[in-house]
Image (cartoon, rainbow, N blue to C red):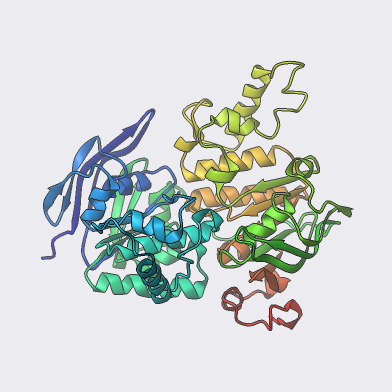
Length: 512
């Protein structure tokens, strides 16, 4: 009989006002890919943070190879061969990729061999299809590229227990397939892989066993032969969710956003956008697909006034707004949900109330002659929390304490409350469970029905196919394909995202 590599018994963790893990038992076996499912806030990340040494348990035991361990820090877990890629990355922004990877190592040397580190990291990236730049500063990277750094860091230090939280969110279908091959090889080599995902198709493709959490407790564990979609969804959220949305036809409206031959540079001084042109109309969702680092961030920031456009124009309802300040774009009805919701979209140390107020505190209904109207502000915040079903213990709770799904709801609540004419949304369901994803998607469809123009940037092709009216693909800062969603094909989109299928990035050369 195979003995578990990791044994968790009676794991218990409480935060102020929240019981995150309630007496959880879990076995992780060598040579096995174990999927961990559950709603946002169900306790999955907390449980894995206990195993990876980031949190200390209030109760329960952890055994590695049958020997009881107590982890006081992630270094203790790394010493036992346990590594985790977290949903919110644990990287030092001013440091290089190589320096971040070296920080968590067990090398006793006081001198860092930069050349050796760079070569080793590049070799790992090539081996696993995770392209990263070892000498780049982390602050210069997109969210997707940061996630690749986390994955390579874990692989570099040779973890025997590999905990991955949504690693395919930044990969094309072809790259995801390659990653799956890598994970299967690692499992076959005796490693234990814990694969946290909200995509049931990935569970079916990868998992040997699935453990489902809800409300901090285990609702069940299934082996591959027992997997059933309806049963898994019920175990996760306690209800059915739709797999396809019924959308009312919205007549094509006036052009809201018109980008004409825009050129912008990224944080490394290289081209982020190259002669990019696109149009988004009233009541239309235009989906932009692409692998992270191909201009998505630059496009979103150029449209919202956060990044300077070096050439070309950006127009709103025919008005040239190129290089207008963010405040001026907000005043013209532009809302923005960025890819980094906790680092850019919200202020972690501020409360729920304060974050909801960030864009509206100057409005007459909230600002008196000298002081803010606290009563009106609190009433509005309570209304938004109630309408958008944001789970908080108090309006005075810091937003860093919220789960990923409720962070996204909070951000969308603030942006939608401004009644936008144009909504720029980047990876809206990244890291969200099926229930939270459905809620976010319905909010976007409601905006579409109200004739809001929506620029949807996502690497999840299923999400784009569900929501978008038109689809474009970004590669190397260029739009290499654009077509109605009815003519889109997942395989073709994946090839375009990988740089195949177009001629020199010319959209006119792409036929789908």
